[in-house]
Amino acid sequence: MKYLPLLWRNLWRRKVRTIFTFLSIVVAFLLFGVLMAIRNSFAAGIDLAGQNRLLTIHRMSIIQLLPERYLAAIRSTPGVRAATHMTWFGGVYQDPKNFFAQMAVDPEGLLRLYPEYVLSDEERATWAKTRTGAVAGRKLAERYGWKVGDRIPIQPTFYRPTDGRPETYEFDLVGIYTGRTADVDETGFFFHHDYLMERVGDPGTVGWYVVEVDDPDRADAVANAIDHQFENSPDETKTTTEKALAQSFAHQIGDTGALLSAIAAVVFFVILLIAGNTMAQSIRERTNELGMLKTLGFTDAMVMSLVLAEALLLVGLAGFLGLGLCVLVTPVFASLVENFLPIFYVPAGALVVGAVLALALGLASGGIPAFLALRLSIVDALGRR
View 1 (cartoon, rainbow, N blue to C red):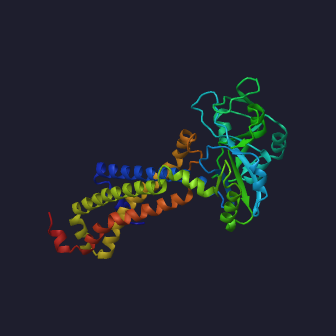
View 2 (cartoon, rainbow, N blue to C red):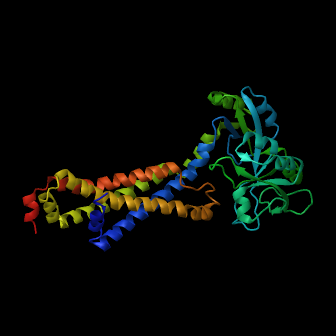
View 3 (cartoon, rainbow, N blue to C red):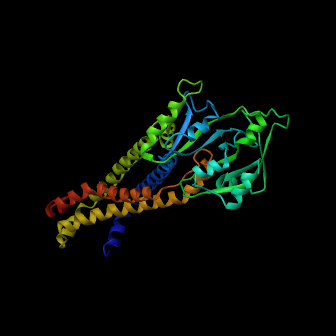
């Protein structure tokens, strides 16, 4: 600690060079934090999706509808603890740009299979008995300023009513759910499937089925048993774990985790070159001073330690500042991208990795200059001009 003023003065001998190097490292760690938040957003639904939940979709495509009568057969399949159905609605609220997920569901089944959606007992009871009732996630309600008791009009894009009433669907907001953990999507909108069927003439179809199994280790066997029941039918099924299906959707645009990690690696490699070059130039300019320190009694190891400490001070401070700024600006980014990435935050693990990387980069950028300082002889150092 007593050498800190010396290290600080050495860093600021070339103010412009130090400032630009410092800022480049800050930006690099800020970018690292944002990339990790994006990676976490893509992986959050995958990590949250439990292996004990299966999804049964149409064999051809998830957009193909399934008969509602399949529900009884699925529930009677050995190994199935519970099952429910969900249907994508895809309506428009006020403006086509106002995108959010809207699902027609069985309220009791949804809340049983997704305990991470938290509603009060009163909201649960009200939703169950209100045919036009709907519940929305906390973030979605905050985005549009909704509150319990509001009437939410949504214009259909696919499910056109056939009951002669106005085409717009009117929903009574009876509850606002919160996530049990930070990884739960709070931008969903759920309403009664019965109300949807009432408006469209009840074709007896659903989008897909969610199945909870007794034993996650037997998930594959249960999935095969479900699909076997509907083989050679007009609507064959494909059952997979919720996690696997979420993973397949994420990989449709590539391995986002590997891509973002590669970008971060390239950024840090460039920063290593920049910081290493800065430290090398700084040491070359002070060769005589290093020789003088050794003349005054500083050991080779002490001189090497001072050079390493200087690099750690530069890179470490910049890295920690960049990570701190990332934590501060992430909520701003989250509000801008919540339509597409509803779960957006920097996980604690990424911050720890960032802190370790800051220290590692500091050691790496100062490693070669420190080694040269260790090997430097007094005669060579004082003889250089």
